[in-house]
Each structure stands twice: as C-alpha cells, then as structure tokens.
Length: 271
Length: 271
Image (cartoon, rainbow over all chains, first blue to last red; front, top):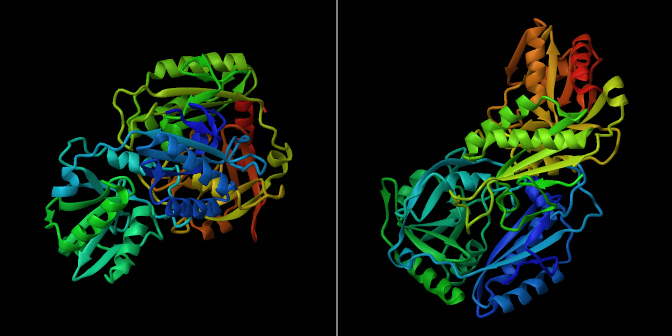
C-alpha cells in the first residue's frame, strides 16, 4: 500500500524537511486489526501532548481521519504516523508559517516469534545509557540515536529485546518497549520524567491493572528491585506483552499477573 | 542550484530514510568561497570520526569528491552535507546491506549583520539544558531537538545567539556555535566529552591560537568563570567569530585576543 504525505500518495519527502534535518517531529506506531487502529485514542492523546510540548501546530481531527482512512485500507498490519515541522528555513529557528507534514506508512503485521509471548524472552543488558532530558522525556520524538546504538549492541536471536538504564543506573525501559515489574503484588513501571518513551501500551496496562484492583505505581526502579522482582514483562502497542525470563545473570518465572494482563492485551490486539 | 542525493540531482529522499525516521545520520555545514569548501579537511575529519562512532560505512573519498564538485558549482554560499544510514527495515536494527545516503544541499551566503562581528553580540541565556550523553557528545548528528527547542526560546533580534549550559550548569556552547573565554591570557573552551558539538571552527581556533603561542585549554567551565572572563566570543564555520558583549546581567569588553583570532578567521573565510 502506498504511503501518504499530507493525505496524498507519496514515497518521498523534500530534502528541506525538518524531520530529516533535525529529527524535528514525532511518530506513532499503531497496530491495525481488521481495518481498525488499536488504541487509537491513546496514540492520538500522546501525539497531541507531544505536539503541545514541541509547539507543533496541526489539525488533530484531520490526523485522526487520515489514520482511520489509511487503516481501513491497510486491513491488517502496522501503521506508522510521522509528524514533522515541515520545511526548514536555514538554521534551527522554526518557521511559524511552515505547515506540519503528515506522513502515514503501512507495513505487514509484525512477525515476532509467538514463543516470545508464550515462553518469555531474554533481555540483552545494553551498555548504552539513556541521557536525562526532561524536555523530551516521555515523547515519541524522532531523535532516536540512543535506540539505534543500543539495538546494535546485540545481533543474536537469543535476545528479543534490550534493557536500558539511564545515566544514574535507573531501570527505564526496553529499546522498543516499556518494562514492568511485579513485587509483592505491586505492579511497578519506571517514572519517565527524565527519559524514556511513555508507551501507549504502558498507559493501557496501567489502566487495566487499576480496573482489576491491582495496586500500581510509577516510580524510579533500581537494578536491585529488578533482580528481586517476582515477575518482569515488557510491552508495546504492536506485540502486546512479552514475559521476561532472563537478563544477564538475573532470572524470573512467568507469573500470574503477567499472564492475566497478557490475556487482556491479546484480546485488544486480537493476537 | 539543485541538491544532490547519491551524486544525482534530487530534491527528495525516500520515506524509509533513517535520517527521517530516527535522525540516524550526521551532517556538516561548510562555507564555500570562490568555489572552494573552507576548512574541508577538518569537516571531513569530524565526519569520519562520526561515521566511525555511529558505524556508518561510506566511501570517504567519494564524499570528498562530491563536496569539491558541488562547491565548485555553487561558487559562493553554504554547502550542507548529510549522511544517513540509508533505508530502514522495520525497527531500530541496522540493515548492514543498506548503503549510506549522501545528500548535498547548497544555499546562498549567510546574511548575518556585519555588526555582529564588529560590535559583538548579546547571548540569550537559554533555559534549555543539554543532556549528557557521552556516546553522542562532540558529533554533529541529526538528533537536534535540543537546539530546536533552545532556539525557540527567543524571537527578538537583540539576541544573535543563545548560551547553552548542560544539566550540571556547566557552560557548553551556543545553539549553533562554540564558545571561548579568555581569562588571564588563557584561551579556554568547554570540554565536550558529555555533550555539545565539536565545531570545526573551534578546532581551527585552538590550532591557530597554539600556533600563536597562546596558552589554550579544553576544560569544564562554570558560569562564574564565564562571568569573570576577560573576553568571550562564539564561533562557527560559517560566520567565523562574533565577540560576545552581554548575556543576561553579565557583560564583557571586546578584547585583543578575540580581535587577533577574528582577523585570522576572516582571512580564512574571506569575510
């Protein structure tokens, strides 16, 4: 299926695009099932928050309608939405008159091994640390060199994801996932006020757990807490939940809360 | 003048380009005088270092030849060279077979007021702090959201540049410049091991000062050192050197070492 740029079929962007020049933009990666974008409201909510923080002005109802229309045509797969600050003048200064560019790309359904969800995965302990930048923390922006470098740390298929800490050795997230731990019945995920991407599936899992009456917390997590956890899992909006069995010398069993949440998320994603 | 992509006239890049998707690439902004790229060896040296650190494989003699040929056609102006990690597969993983994409863009000579160099400038004290990321520090990579946000902090023309500190309140650089101070005869610029861009003009000025027998140092600088400095100036490879007269409540006179270095740099840039 053709990509769309500003609502028109296109496969390129101008060289002047600020997404290319500076990574000046945001993106969303959205699972599409039966022509329907999954968790669309949460994706668009995060996108709006990102636009507000980066001062990107766009017609959000237009974005929603384009995503809905594109997803309907895609049927099954993954929709990637990128918003950039349009074309650049010279230099970092924003052109207040430049229109935000809307890019929609489709790809086939993700082909991760089913065993990742069933048996659980091994995390590679990345040496790359996330820098602490509160102005960008939580956003799914286009400055992703840290993830590129971290993902290049391992090539083997024994590791399905990588664990990322911040500069102060806090446990933050995966390279393309958020991370949860369960400790004494408490469901805990990292506070993302300094770095990290506030994932849509993370938000959904927090809400689902609260609805189940499970105590949840968003707080700093250190490596010792991770080691001592009863359950560990990672999540994102495409694959749902993968239990984590191992990371370096640490290991965990797949636990009941992980399985319960996995069931809920599978129903959402129709996996 | 047309832009070039991989040596061919073009004005667009594919949507799959990793420069757009992740800011996965590097750039150089090169002054062109009489068809000749100024400080080309230093630009290409930094680019090679960046390619090594980001594992971007490219034929550097091809890049050099393209820059030389494009500059010859441009005559007078500014040449922007971008290297990206080519087209992406899905996700952050690098495709080892993807060719690095080479983008060359030209623009007319910069039109900064001459008074900036003659009378000196006022720096805006940016609230945006640079995150500390040693893996990316020094590189002129495409993840530039911090600069975009910082540059948006002021709109008035009274401020020609902005001063950027890091998260630990160290004095690092301008938004699009490096910064030097002179204190008791010592020429000092910030250590860029944690953040900042290691500018080509910064390297040239360090070398020129050493050749003049001026004591130079690359070290951490705090705000008090900046305040107490005898001379302050900013530099980049397009405008050369601008003396700094004021930043918030701090002020300085334009001093003799600034003027001496400015003369050398002006000759290089033929300003």
